[in-house]
Length: 363
Image 1 (cartoon, helix red, strand yellow):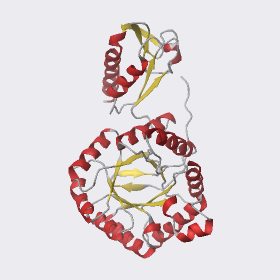
Image 2 (cartoon, rainbow, N blue to C red; image 1 turned 180 degrees about the vertical axis):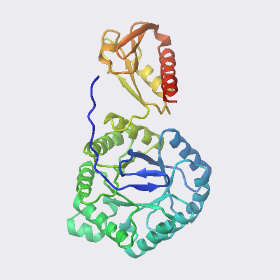
Image 3 (tube, rainbow, N blue to C red; image 1 turned 180 degrees about the horizontal axis):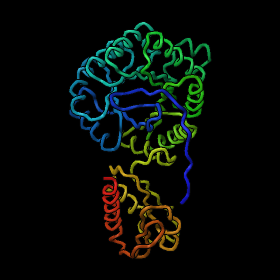
Image 4 (cartoon, rainbow, N blue to C red; image 1 turned 60 degrees about the vertical axis):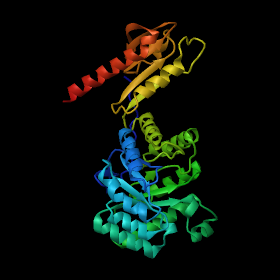
């Protein structure tokens, strides 16, 4: 069996957001942010529930006003994963969110101010609430922009280090740090730089990454490069769209780098002139039916019975189609022939049987 490269992660200090450890050697944490109106408690709880089903481990919600801050109490009661409040500008809202039971907050010190930040730190310290220092290229302090001539990696890092110093001066160390930019090269350079200067856990993401295709590309490159270099402790894939998709893509990035094996790893061949089945429809149906699966399994969907099993020999289970007929295989070995119209059902039965067998052996 082919050996997988083991990525050596940079050692960071552990920080807890509720009962979820970030950094300190813990598995890289996947998080997302709701796109509901936080004041709509029912809709927000429902969306977080969908995120939980998709494997999301931390949920962040926007807190634009007092009503949203007050809603946090009821949202927190009905969700399973830790809740993070996203705060912009208002230290009053940050303190109210902390008092209303959130497990963490995300603030951008650049748009709040040092003295008001101290009030937030004091409140968070009293209630053991983690804080993410979020530095964005679009909201740097004026002095940083003037000094560096724009939101350069060095400017982002100096801003973050200045904020960290304020936190440490007050004896507060439950800190995560993010340096986000919509420019992938800037984002990568900034994280590399700060990784050499601090051991606080780093939250990775490309901000304002766009629609699903644009975000998938930008996030896979930016987050992927850093993870491959051992940098990063928690990630978010930012998409203009359904946040559940963010968690899905995040896990795909982690699986691709063999960092976390969660959920099905579906491999399928690009269609060519030998393909004699509707491979596009088949892949779409299998992905839909496997949505929410937590167990790791490599599943191959091949369009050619001649080369399919051989090319996908590493797959745990796979199917390869032909004209009206296909075959089921495991680890490259053909198990049996199957009519084309039954391929997906047979595959699903085989996957469910394998999952049940693994669970039984784990007991």
